[in-house]
Image 1 (cartoon, rainbow, N blue to C red):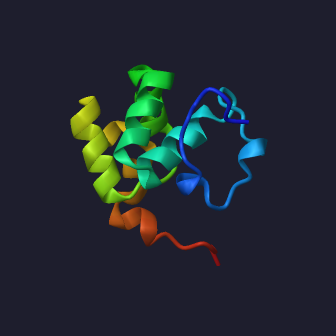
Image 2 (spheres, one colour; image 1 turned 45 degrees about the vertical axis):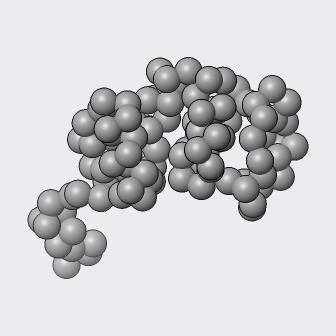
Length: 103
């Protein structure tokens, strides 16, 4: 449950907040606030978790939209290539053209 982190339910419209743990689910919480939270919630989340944890969450995020990823790279001074969601989006054409069945 979010007891110490004071943010709205807006980023978590589809989640029961009572099921979230601030420490165990930190990466998920940070990713949701980055994608759907308000500016004040981003500031609160950064103060609560610290910038290092935010950087870790951005690098490990399976998906971030392009606008959020670009903002985070500039704000946190990281390269897009270091982020899982960027490398996942930018596979080479050969990787997409591989056949699933070899017959």
